[in-house]
Length: 250
Image 1 (tube, one colour):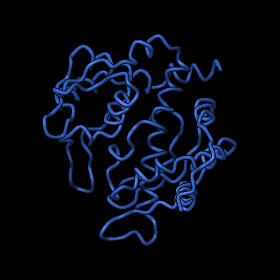
Image 2 (image 1 turned 90 degrees about the horizontal axis):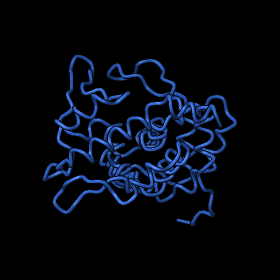
Image 3 (image 1 turned 45 degrees about the horizontal axis):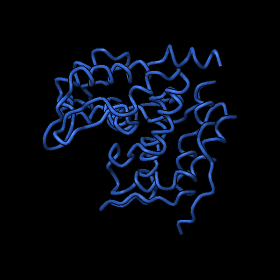
Image 4 (image 1 turned 30 degrees about the vertical axis):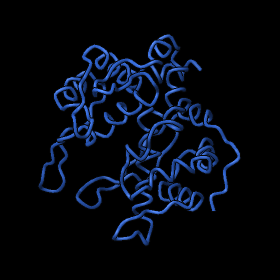
């Protein structure tokens, strides 16, 4: 487990998560009144302290898009939502972010307890639908049926490289989730993208998976074509996931 502890210490996730907690506790951030988001001033201040800050500008073709809201910075927003879901932070009735009931216990925990419990909090208590509000209730349905996904993830522990198309397709077939939009999703391309974003991208934030990019596709953006669990950190985290008897949802 020494190598696993080294990966946690050397990685970006726990460092950035704890930076976020310290800043939020000290500054007592007041969220925006309408969307209840962290104001961009604070987002920029916190991001400057991160080892892995989000890219605030994205070039798509000849156009450059600048983030105007916190939720457009996916990794930052993920850390924010996880901090509240884990009880490390809380939001008061007046929209002020303060330390939560679990913050003291979190700080007294060792490396494995911190990352392991945060990973399980993401799996069980983090609101996937708030993080990924597309395809109607796609992410909510996926989370409700997450027990079906555990065996699929655990199969990847022994695999050197996993094809994303195959993995996302198996998750969709096993869970029966559908992408709901006016345009439809006849080839499941949107649903597969949803699985990648809600599961694989989230796991990459923890340092649990390495995402392998292919050639640049539409809009000159590289697509994720495969992934592998990091060894030993990713394999250990996936091994923590419970594998209960799933509920029949048909």
